[in-house]
Image 1 (cartoon, rainbow, N blue to C red):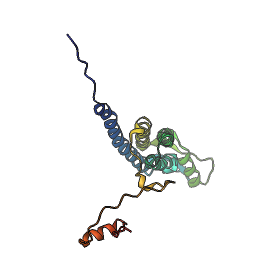
Image 2 (cartoon, rainbow, N blue to C red):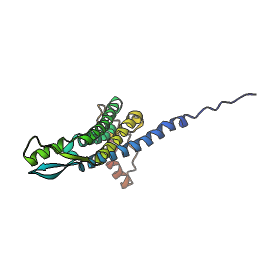
Image 3 (tube, rainbow, N blue to C red):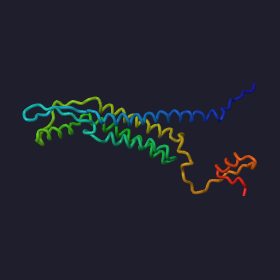
Image 4 (cartoon, rainbow, N blue to C red):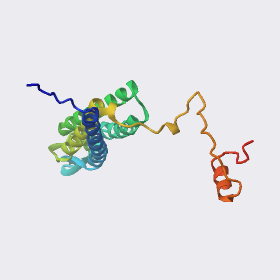
Length: 213
């Protein structure tokens, strides 16, 4: 008895990477854009609060994320630019940009988590309010916004990792926007019926010589 071994069709073999590329592209775009937006939004919110003693009385102070650290917002903007730049390059260039995207996400996470216990911004405000450089804030408290910024950074990191893993399957900018050194071959002019004026106009619109000269 002869056994017939089924040979997978080439199209079915290529369908797997292509499908993974489409899915990863959609996830990376969504995660990167959402992560950058979340990180930027979080840095504009109140991260820390405390109390300082001014003229013998308690004085409440608050600090936004941008007061605590400007790193998450800066890296979110760079990461968003890198996400767009991924589609403008190919090969090794795409790998480098994807690595930059991942690093932006990791840096955003680290900076946001470090900001959770940072009291320097409130101490500076306490010193200005009290007119004493040695004044510090007490009863220090933090909100959940630093962790929200860290989540945004994690989404940017996810986009970078997906770009590193599946970026070679993603499309690039159309070649018509790229300048090549060699001139593009012109298409052969189609025959034009001189008795049909509409064909003459179509030929002129295509940049062809309807006279055939």
